[in-house]
Image (cartoon, rainbow, N blue to C red):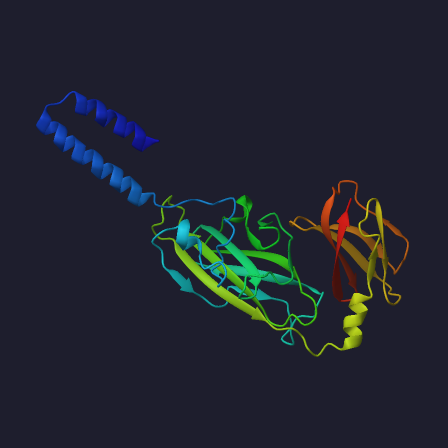
Length: 291
């Protein structure tokens, strides 16, 4: 806005001067315009990164490609971590994925992550668990939200990941991260890319895999209630519901194993949801449709 006012004043001045002075003013005006373009050559996406900027082989672009021109992409290990054991993920289990970027002197941060294979297919399901992140691209990406960009020298985000079905094999999380000094330009911005690969736990026996598949959630589609059957009695189970687009989880049941009716929360609207069933220290997920 300031640049527009200055340009307007200069134009008025041009119209009132002789030809020689007019030429000098025009040159000054062009220098101001070019300088403004150079300084402000940055597009702000405080509310979340556009889809497809993880740097994966399928996306092939990051925030340096479009939002923060002129900044080199620096590969950096160690940004992503999880509570997945060294033996690998168990199909159907839910894990916490942590993203942490450290950049002294920076105060605004952003990111985008996706668990993909090299064909761009999403592996497993990501679940938003804080208001600092959001799921986009119909479950393909997770990125920062408006409330998840501020930090002092560092920033971290976390989300849940429901492991894919048995036989999927290795899963690679691709991520792009932006650390800025919040000076309204791309001067001093740093773009980092990272990959984090997890293996499938192939030591899990067929019987265990079958017990996961034996958890039945019905009716599906559901309307006012669901029933959950587990393969064996358990002292304590916890049932949560997640929107496929992310959001806070609703705990809809906590108690002993039961085949009774579990009412759905009143605020649940029609759509696709994940129902996670936690038995002891394992969590299994099922996808349902709510009418």
